[in-house]
Amino acid sequence: MMPENEQQDSNTLAGEYVLGTLQGQDRIDFEQRLDSDVQLQGEVDAWHQRFAPMLDGIEPVTPPNAVWDQIAHRIEPGQPAHEESTGFWNSLSFWRNLGMVAATLVLALGMTLMTTRQQGMEMDSIMVVLNDQYRTGWLVGAHASEGFLNVKAVEPTELPKGKVCQLWMEDERGHLHPIGLLPHNGSQQMDLPNSMSTRNRFKVSVELMDLLPKDKPSSEIVFEGKLTEI
Amino acid sequence: MSVAYVSTCRFDAWSVLLRYIYIPRGEFMANGDNDQQEAIRLRNQELERLLAACALSDRKAFARLYSMTSAKLYGVVLRILNRDDLAQDCLQDAYIKVWNNAGNYRSQMAAPLTWMSAIVRNQALDLLRKRKREVMESNDSGLPEQIDGALLPLEGLTRTDDGKRLGNCLEQLKEQQRQVIALAYFKGLTHDELAAYTETPLGTIKTWIRRGLDQLRRCLES
Image (cartoon, rainbow over all chains, first blue to last red; front, side, top):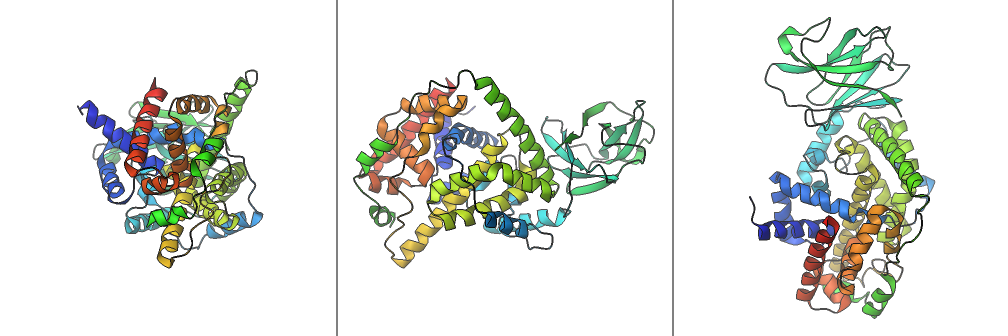
């Protein structure tokens, strides 16, 4: 366990990092520590939360329409991925990635992220599938008129080799229909059975990759939920 | 280097600071508190769903997210940068970051607007620092937009429960500690710049901030 003085120092450093007064080599050293120090990441998160109300007092100001026009243009399919795409944020704590480090790494990961995205989807309902830590494991989106789901891995559950998470959809009679395997990374489209609606419930089971069941899950359900309209 | 930069902005700093960093005690909203909390909860739920849809590349959801949050975030950027042209470019870049990183938002870590505000604030402070470096390299006469005489927005701390708690804890700090923390947070001033701007020894500034943060944390956790 960390001595109290050391704990206090690292907490204050985290506060200075969020405040912005930690600069130069101290900031670089701090960010290097932050990369692997989960406790420090939690302290940075906590400071962001503590300071958040500071921004509440600022009066809203409507930006000119041209700002949105520019943004809309930049996210059109086919536009190059700019330096703003920071896959660097994919680690446990996003806050630490708000600094100015590892620009080349940021660009490389950002480009990877962009290439895995499928452009131009429009969703009218969304479901967050929780992982074994009760955090966002996958995002599932659907459009009522489309016959498929769009599934994106966020923080998927770590499974033993040979095991996978299988997504099921429940019909009105309580029967489960296999929809697909939740991806371990990137995005994936999954076709929906013709008779099914996006109003049905979804369930997830953990299965053996080589013995995927088709009628019903072979193990207990680890998650269930419904799509929610946006 | 940074001393030269801030010295161009100095104008009887303490008297201005004493005037504009004031936290009024809120005694309102007792009746509307529940309604307001419910409205915030519903808004957060919608923003979470929109961010999830953005992560799945839904541009329509992104447009809705922008319409719900851009005025708030533009206000933040404008407050930090004080210039329309810079603020508009900065807001644009910040939203591209939100779009590209929506899949990394974690609701257990922060409310959606807190997450987006942190992105926007950091984007604005990065821009401010970049311009500072450019000015220093060109020996220009400084960045008059960085610090102005307008009120820092601490008076808004009475609007939410978290804000009231933070406001009460800030009130327990020494005036100077509160002032340098607010200037660093809103204007991105470094230790050196705060020392120059307030005409206070650097060591004293560092002590004020460290002790101020420690005291703030203890107060908020109590």
